[in-house]
Image (cartoon, rainbow over all chains, first blue to last red; front, side):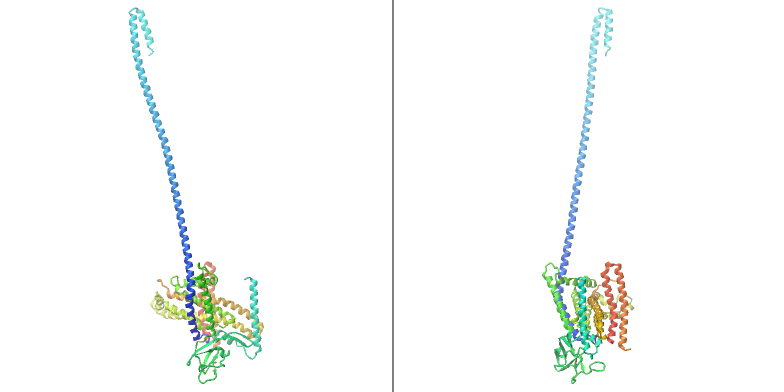
Length: 164
Length: 362
Length: 69
């Protein structure tokens, strides 16, 4: 029975002691300790956040670099393609031109040949006409002297003239 | 510590304890006429006392006298407890400030006017004396103040270390204190009270935890054994009362609503639950008080009872067994010191959490 | 039988009840920890709290016994 009866004296001193303890420890121990722990945790958290941000920035930068590189590569490819196209076009153009020129030249040559031929034929005709006239003159002259001979001459002349 | 060193230490402790017990056994054998009463011995160890008793050597008691402070009808009366000359059977009468005082089983009685000696009735209670208002510095109060000084030394010392180092890296005593403080914060305060409100209760929880723990440990030290502060119901009652007061004053609307008009149950059930919840307000601190008191007292009683076996059987042969058993119990008690401090703190935190909880609708 | 004897029996009965209760809590906590070792800390804390609640009831019995003894 005695054991479970609280004595007033101890209750009194416990209240006083505990209040003093609580007050002094709160002011001089818990506040500094918890404050230090908190600010350390804050600084660790901040440092981690900064590291994370730096990492993300780095990643962004890398992605940017990659993008720029890709763009450059694309551009180069485009330029190469253009150059190739131009080359092909130039070659084709040259070929076309050459072909056109040749054809034109051939045509001109053919025309020239044709006109030469016409001229030659006309010349020949003239000469044949002149020759015929000369023959006719000679025949006429000869007939006048000898009939047989005239005949023979005409025969001869005609024989020669059948060439054309 | 390696195993061999531990074994040597263990044997050493066993030998020292054994020889101490042996000396006491021979001592009791010398004065055969005094019969050993284990109940009286245990009760005197477990209860409070007016002197800080250290050791008995050859019938000579060595103790620190402590001041007795009484409030009688003649005003404040103080004298040193050494005036009783180690008597606690009410035989030594101290006259002071117009009153006559005796120490009867570590309670101070004031003899009624006209009485010269204490008369004890049939029920072993004083007949012609009454108890004055007693606020003496007993050994428990003395021990409490020592523990207060130790706590100041440890924690203010630790806090100083933080001020000195600019990176807040714990060094020395701070590296011992910090994990414990963080344990209270992260394992007790935050889960029980919640991230938002725990800060307000941290000083109380920390103080109560270390105060109880240190005094539990002090209660186990043999030389101050008997300064059984945490096993004294007055002490545990006071701490439980603090928890009760804080819980009651920090109770929000929700808390009181859950007590008087439990939401979410039918009306007859509300009426039925109300008295149970009201009783619950009081049983919580009472169970806190009784748990700590009974656990610590029980531990002390068991250790002392095992030791008493030697004197009950009056033979040295029992000594190794009872020393081994009480050593075993003391090792368990070392764990219990921490567990009981932890449980007192976590339950206090739980009650604060219940009082401040914002309920979602359920 | 004296009142002290009856009080002692009462304390013993209270201890039996608490023993069964705490034993069940301890057993279940062990099982839970074996199943989920990662929840070790939380289970231990709740087991201790529950054990404290069960123990409190038994300690009321002990205190009643002390009142009589």
